[in-house]
Amino acid sequence: MNKQSSVQAYRAGLLHFHADPAFNERAHAWHADGLLVVENGKVSAAGDYAALAPTLPPGTEVKDYRGKIIMPGFIDSHVHYPQTDMIASPAPGLLPWLEQYTFPTERQFADPAHGAQVAEFFLDQLLANGTTTAMVYCTVHPQSVDAFFTASEGRGLRMIAGKVMMDRHCPEFLCDSAASGAEETEALIQRWHKKGRSLYAITPRFAPTSTEAQLQLAGELARKYPDTFLQTHVSENKEECAWVKQLFPEARSYLDVYDRYGMMRPRAVYGHCIWLDETDRARMAETRAAAAVCPTSNLFLGSGLFDFEQADRAGMLLSLATDVGAGTSFSMLQTMNEAYKVARLKGSYLPAMRMFYLATLGAARSLHLDDTIGSFAVGREADFIVLDPQATPLLARRSANTDSLEEQLFALALLGDDRAIAASYAGGRLVHARGQG
Ligand code: GUN
Ligand code: ZN
Image (cartoon, rainbow, N blue to C red; front, top):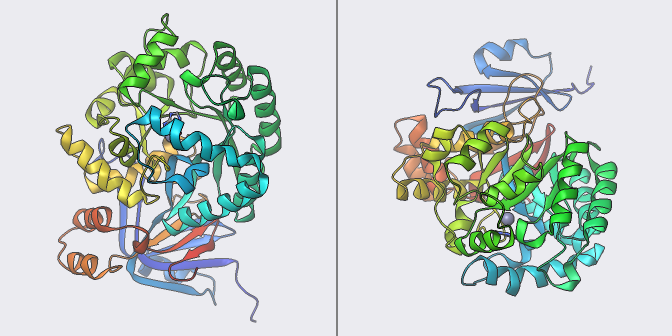
């Protein structure tokens, strides 16, 4: 019988999480000689090779990744695909950067062919960096969303994305209106939300570029479609915060602007959250909205340092994100590297174990998708990556001198990038192999 089995198995070191290491000493599962078993695109078992190998159907091929580490694919909870071509554009802070680079770059997405081509390149970058799910800003053009989801569906990826809504304080060529932004958003929800692996995010860019009428309609959509996602920016930069105070004098805080319009709820993800106060943090925790922490972006634009300790004290949902194009790398490993340093500068400490949690199960929990992705619990979608501790000569030497899993993961986070991702799988299918395009 040479009928191919629907079961696939992968042998390597196996790491995943079932709890947050900041609050639970036994948060992770580690199998030094592990086996991941996948059936019909979903995890059917994860554990020790010695225990699981005898249970495989006869003839199952075991892909041998010994010496490497398999873990759930990274989740990037805040990234702008249209900004791919303007990554590393210098400007003195957020507002001039938006004016000088972002808006002219986003203008090009009126052309669907341009959107399609950038979306493919962007997805190549995500997968080469081990990111299998992302929460993605498109542009104000509905066709930029069609281009993105067409590309991500074509690869079988679980992606969250949405059309930017902005109806003021932006160039004419990027402006929608309160009514057209809401209508286009609703049509896109109907076209894409839960189609295959696609999920829709209602996406008002940030409070300064939306009128009260637009925020009102965004909040109404968030209530009408409670299982959609919502994404925006909050409290990133001091000048931005001062501007919001002027524009919305009646609001208690920047975050309160969104709260007043009913935009704080599970599956709402707020980018940056640097200048929140204690009341804001409590409100984030209470509403189960989540913060997307973007350290490479925050350091690049000089926005500020996210306070992990205060966020944890409040019990906020947290995830890590690149925020490309203000973020300077697509790599979640490089994002951890910078997150670690941000935490140090705030006088706190992020163990590697916590950072890998935040990039996998922590992000899935932030998105309320932890029953679907983010771990190797049975039935989860088989989105996983293969990390290579020998990826570079320096990483190989450092890896040979590590005394614990924590040290090994820390070296990967600090020294690793796309070279450390040997392969990425989505829904049990190989979607990237290092050195093969
Ligand atoms: N605030 C509003 N728009 C943006 C954006 O595109 N990038 C960042 N980093 N902040 C924003
Ligand atoms: Zn952003």
